[in-house]
Image 1 (spheres, rainbow, N blue to C red):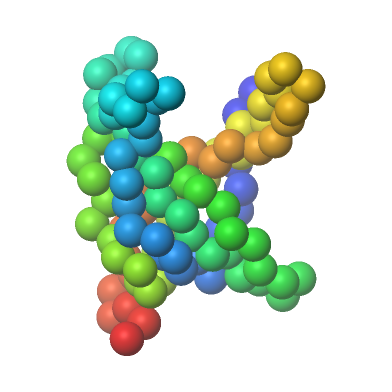
Image 2: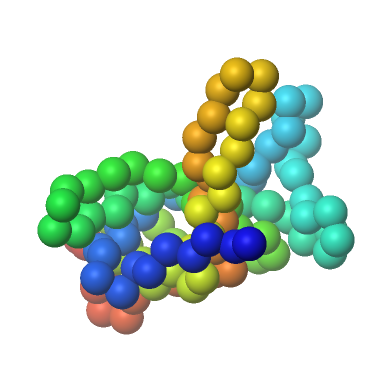
Length: 105
């Protein structure tokens, strides 16, 4: 089952430029089925309950976003994980794009 996050009432702002998502050896990861390169983008998500910094993974072309851009997030998926007694939630999206005319200066 996939868990999607509704971002329609959330303000998502790029807080770090996209970077290659690397493995433990420093090589950029790629999707298993498609071979598309993976990217990590740190964002700040704000709604009426407060804000949180998360990292969103995308695959394919590097997202053309920069720090301060308000973002449109396509199909944000929350992926719970647990490894060696540690756990958390990873986030993945189909795409991250700047919202038209909303870049912070």
